[in-house]
Length: 319
Image (tube, rainbow, N blue to C red; front, side):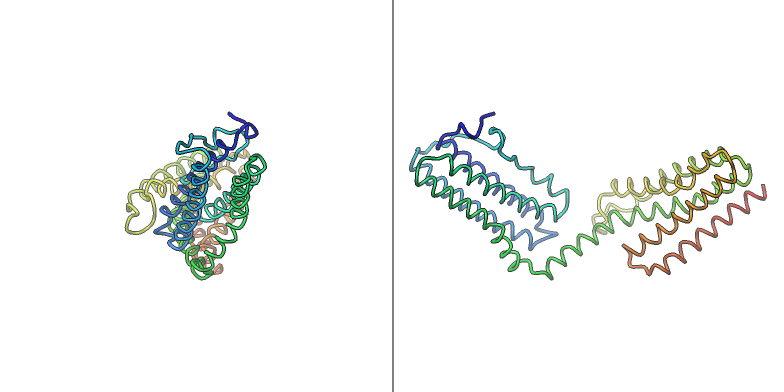
């Protein structure tokens, strides 16, 4: 890799042109990817593409006047110490706030580059342009904020964030909650029936593991095959099935693990405490993400869990 300090004026300008081209492409990718779910934010990035293209044209005009038509290919990754951009697709996968934050950081990095580049050049016109671009990049975040105020007022941003929240609930929370409820409640009866029938914690543990894994596989396939998510907006069926299956298994294993304790009375006491915690956790998730009053959620979940728990004890005691 070349050191930045070894670049001459021609190479600095060539690198700056390459940087502007890459940044404009990243902003264009953001705009394209966000056009359906976040149309107002997408238009902000379209405006930023225009800004970067103006910078690129100014740099190319100066380069052609000084060095001619041929611009050598010099990229960020070829120069030691220059911040390399993360690909747009990688940032997009982290959510809308990550995209906005990445864009702000890009402008700060660009301003820093132009300040350092201006110090390296000996040509007055080149230094002036690089200094002006440093100021422009410093102001770009403010400009983007002004664009956001015009294109993305608080009400629209709240709407976009609420849409993102609804998708998260629909695609992640809902299948996870269904799995957690099924795993926590449906496995209560076999686990505690086995425990009371045998009074042997290890046998109860084996039954609990079998019931949890079996329920997880069953619920995972059921969720994945329930619909393809295209019309319902529930997202990729494989991901939903994986989330549902894992949470189902986790819900059953939670009150199964205490039966690794050798003493039956201690294992039973710990398992009962875990059951209470599981039911309260389910109630909290329903209150937090499904707008269910916490009191109602607790009554519904605890009442259902208590019925299944009682059924397990009665069946186990009868044996």
